[in-house]
Amino acid sequence: MEKANLTAELIKNYTPIEEAKSDIMAVGFTLISATYGSGGTRVDVLKQVNKNIKDSRLNMTVNKDTLGDPIPYYQKYLSIEYRYQGKRFKKDFHEGANVTLPP
Image (cartoon, rainbow, N blue to C red):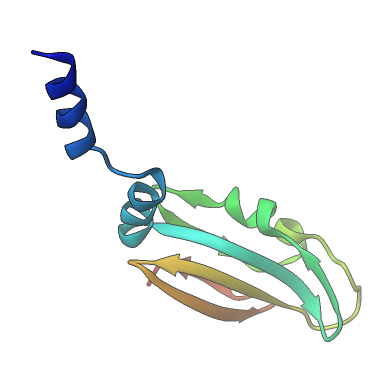
């Protein structure tokens, strides 16, 4: 195949990286953010929450064993923002709740 024809064929079949990423994200489950605490005292727990994802599903219990205790003696909650099937969601879970995402 001529070099010009080969180049034209490659360009025709080219998928931009951002478009390819959005195709993957459209069908998958992706955490955007995760914070834990109460009121104005919240900590980033995205890394801890990510550790509980297996086979594209998040299963965990919200407690000090999984997320630490940023403000002892106060009722805390976990806020999670995630993308699933191309849509963005935000869910809050109180301390002691079992989290299973996506639904």
